[in-house]
Image 1 (tube, rainbow, N blue to C red):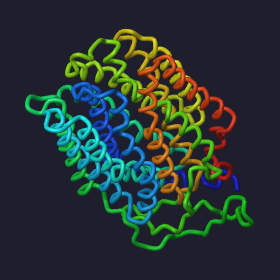
Image 2 (image 1 turned 90 degrees about the vertical axis):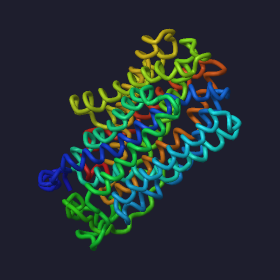
Image 3 (image 1 turned 45 degrees about the horizontal axis):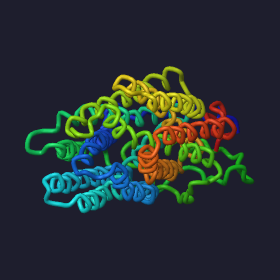
Length: 452
């Protein structure tokens, strides 16, 4: 079967409406902005609580581990319950987590809880995000992937990924403005509880129900390269009912190292760990290099500026570079990790706010290319029916990078900042080598008969 067999279907597929895409964008934007707003104030909160930096990073570990375990489960459940239900569950997890975190940190900063119990309860509150918040991203990705043509999927998923980028701009930018009298450093938590609730109401009202309600149509598919693999399989790309998905045929559970996605998973794991280490180090480096350890409340502003500059660079990658250059998954990953390595070196040697922001921005530009490349590569490697499984793997890999990498980065940074940044650069170079040798070329990935 040639790729031309799919062209009539690809050309007649209706794109997702702008209103629905905006709503999906808002779901991802809200959670991203809330999390980065939290990250911009947590170094100052840790300093105010007088705890070591590494313990602040470790407080996220349990949540990240739950994300790894739960994301694939919710992704599979979205195939049966519908994407909208899982998006709503993810938002509820985000709202509950932010509210409980605010309550715990308020008690800790007021001196009503010892620092140890504050961090322990904070970690438990974050577990609601890891356990239930992980339902939203794979559902959003699967919703988009199952409704876009293969030739358009990299850019569509890049647009969704850019919602994270915009969120990481807004979060640090808004966080200092949300530090208000009476609530102090927990103001951003409370503000995003409200914003999350507004987004949840909009999702419930405006996005049509997509719970599967009727039998799937089309042919039965054999395994790739099976005895009848030359039968027409273009029906997998046909447009589904606009309001209600077909009840999905059984799809085999997809593990991390399923042969078709294995190279993308390895690249995603290594690059994701490099990204997580830089994110973990950034706030503490700003406090150290600018001498703000003794005034933690004043540190939220400069930390927010650096994170915001990095987020703008991420948006530049996902809104400008990828669509303008029409980059495929492999090219995005290879160019991304090269820029990330260069930015990490500059970030590591910078001594003032301008240099720190510049280095972090270049690194973020690189990771902004890398992440949608990984997402799209994994999506294009499998069939449309397997998008739920693939999105679960992608979300799980993303979460896995945040289990130990941020704490490891901060621990290494505390002992030797040069070693910490050398490890990040080494991970980026490893992705470049693996990507060059193992990732499917972008020309091949656009042809379903060869890539899947």
